[in-house]
Image 1 (cartoon, rainbow, N blue to C red):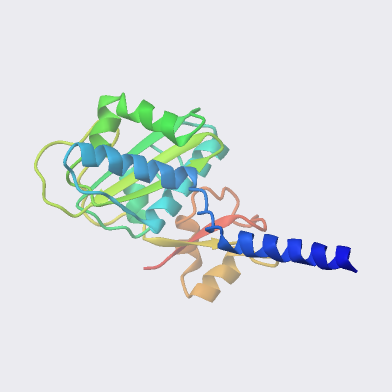
Image 2 (cartoon, rainbow, N blue to C red):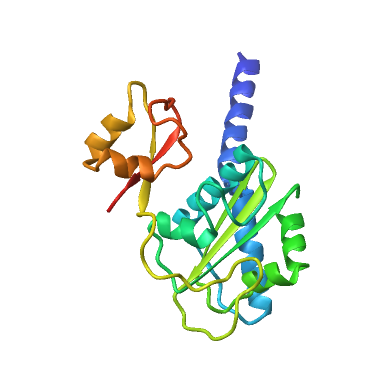
Length: 222
């Protein structure tokens, strides 16, 4: 009886002790770490921090996946065109924009060291015109996207700062994940867009009659 009481007392003490411990903060993702490192570098240069933009991060992830799946490594995508074309396609407006890409770096610190050691990439990270950043990491491929609305003089870097072209071209789109039973016709009808416009917005689909579950289809919004 005494043994059981002693055991219960020990268990209660352990519960109280564990409850008193502070909850461990969730570990930062590689993408979050990159944003923190970027803002640390900007602080050293006397620049304001960038805001982590979830939509830019989603677009950056789509670009990283596109590079991986289509076996290329370039600022110009065979699917989406330039980073500036891609931003406009996803409905992102900006006065200035830029992209940094990298491949083969194992973690956030090493990829940031690589970017900061390259004049063009460094210029993007420290560009005073930027307000927002999106970051993605997919199968060893890293992508940073920057946008800003500030009016700042000076030229952008070789890694992609550019003022936007005139409006036009490919319409803005929203991503849609194909479900069982879907066809392009059904998706177009559900969103109220012409089938030809849906097909035109998805040049990556070689055969409009053949789409598969889990595939991403981009639906025009205008």
